[in-house]
Length: 154
Image 1 (cartoon, rainbow, N blue to C red):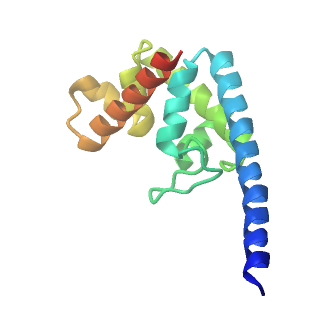
Image 2 (cartoon, rainbow, N blue to C red; image 1 turned 180 degrees about the vertical axis):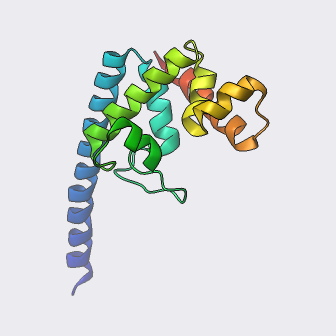
C-alpha cells in the first residue's frame, strides 16, 4: 500500500472517530446541563465532577468498580435503581440526582458534597471537613479548582 493511501485512510478514520467523540461530548454536555438545572445543582460543579471522574470518556471502568461518565459505584447504582451504568442518560441523571440529595444532606456545602461523592456520605458526615485522607483532600481541591475556573470563564 502506498504512503499516500495510508495517509488518507488515517485522516478519514480520524475524522470519523473524532466527530463521533465530539458528538458524544455534545450529548453528554447536554445531559449534564439539563439534569443539573433540573435538580438545581450548579452546572459548573457537575461538569467539574465529570471532568475529574471520567474526563468525558464514554464509559470508563475504574479499578474500584466505578463505571460511566460520572463513575457510579455498584452500591450507589443499586440505591438509585440504575440499570445500566454505561447508559449516558441513566448515568448522568441519577448521578446528578444523587448530588442533589448530597447537597440537601450537607446544606449545599459543595466541599462536603464533593467529598461525599468521592468517598462515602456516612464517613464524611462523621468527619465533616476534618478528613485527613489525602485522596479525599486532593479530590475536593481538584473539584474546587475546576469550579472556580469555570466560574471565572463566565
